Amino acid sequence: MALLQIFGLFFAMALLGLPLVYALLATTVGFIAWKGLGHPLETIFLTYIGGVEPFILIAVPLFVVAGELLSHGGVGRRIIAFARTVFGFMPGGLGIVTVAACLLFGGVSGSAIAGAAAVGSVMIPAMVDRGYPKAFAAALVATAGTLAIIIPPSIPMLVYGFVAGASVRDLFLSGIVPGLLFGIAMMLICVHHGRRYGWDTGGARASRTEIWTAFREALPALTMPLLILGGIWTGMFTPTESAAVAVVYGLLVSIVVYRDLTWRDLPGLMLNAFVTSAVVMVVVGATAALAWLITVEQIPAQLTQMVRDFTAARWSFLLLVNGVLLVLGIFLEPLPALVLTAPVLVPLARAYGIDLVHLGLLMTCNLAIGLYSPPVGGTLFVAGRIAGVGIGAISRALVPLFASSLVVLVLITYVEWLPMGLVWLMRN
Image (cartoon, rainbow, N blue to C red; front, side, top):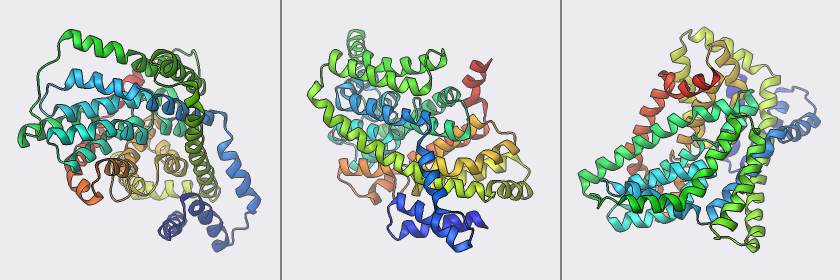
């Protein structure tokens, strides 16, 4: 089948060590030449450019800039301090603090890598000092860091909304409950390990005054996701405009309120954001070219008929989607994976009567799990580097966290009202 041949060619290119952009482009050109399709190469160039031209994609570099501003200021430190004040007394308290900090920081940055790096640099040494094994501390940060792309504002959901024509507002809403469920599942693992192994039996409960002080310090940072989402849901601004608001707000918080950054720091931060955004957009353009080839060869229509002949059951199709994306997420970052697979899966989802918002959520969650799946997970490498442990040790410590994530994934897949309840409520 053409789709299997395309993916086989792509993985062969990737295994040869080609950078992702070149592997995607070589697969597109190579398949056209192999099959003698006759598509002019100029079309690939135009499709590449067209893949990064849409106005809504301006939000991607803007959110990256906002994340840079807040992650390099004192936002991460204050969020961690607030989480520690609230949850530090519980068994497995530092682990719970790590998960809570990743949830809160994710609502500010929208970047899994940034969340894992910012929280991990503080919490991994603290957990190790408390008695946690380095491998478990790294595994927890790698897992919890991915919550940033599930809860709003999520850059992958923004890109999926553009590709699939789904409501970004509804996508952001759909991520709230699943993000909390994933976080709670990780916290329960921390409580269990804290009690069973005696790593962290908890401490004294913070007073109301201490909690209020920590909350007041973190409030300017915690207000950012509320400002962004509130503006989108009330119609005050679009998702793209919300990214610009996030940048302005990030400047105010980091330079005026917290004063952790100065105007002299901005050129370096902007350069980092530019490099990150450029890498993302180059990959998105190359993925768009390959997605165009898949679409123009009518592979989605062929695949739709094949899958419907294979099974008429909606539950088995969703199981198939989860299985394919879990494997794909090991090899591809969320953004290129979404751009590549959404044109294929959206027609299938429509054929089975699946809400495109629910599909986008499931795709994002599967690809988030891929970020900490061995051997090439992005947050896995970041956490391992901070902790100074190998992927093998982290992978063994990752087993209970990975299992709990799969349980939550099954719940949000088949108990549709869990992730979609807020969406249905707001639609009405």
